[in-house]
Length: 103
Image (cartoon, rainbow, N blue to C red; front, side, top):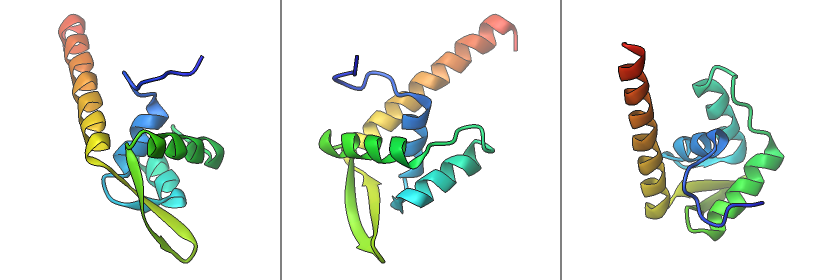
């Protein structure tokens, strides 16, 4: 069952938005995610473009330009807020884990 609203992001969603802090095209997004995660998270083109399409419909990302037939995407203000909220949620998660694990 698909989610209607984003409450928490999946890991690929998080990394897609994180990689769009600077406008990028699809291949650039995939490459950035691989670099950030040392190859652990591999977002394929099907997943990437399905999520970009969804994010665009929900005003989370927007197409900025087309260069050499490559569409560039960037975060909207709403997208930045969603990314920031998720980042803060993850920081709390780690903080609580550190406390309980005694680290």
